[in-house]
Amino acid sequence: FPVTIRQSYGKMPRGIEQSYMWRDEEAECLLRICYDPDGIVVGVQAIGVRLRHEICREWIEHRWHIDEARKFIATAIFDPQLSLKHEL
Image (cartoon, rainbow, N blue to C red; front, side, top):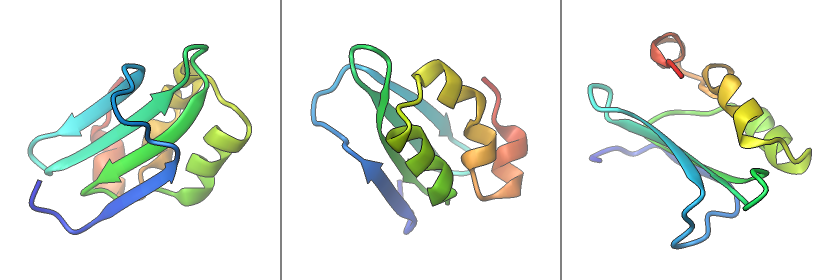
């Protein structure tokens, strides 16, 4: 991705198999949410898109399950254009 916006929150372990990834080819952005074997969110990484840090911290600090976090991805995305385009 030839972008300048990069954000990471929590832990983004290398080689973790438990992650949900959303990618928008047209806007050249990517969102990856890592979670532990129990489905608890442990890290969030965004490339090419701005996220609301308070929402990402909420997911991690309050041990949200990945299924619940996915429901709020559009809310976490700071760019209104991308929030409207996000579909689960």
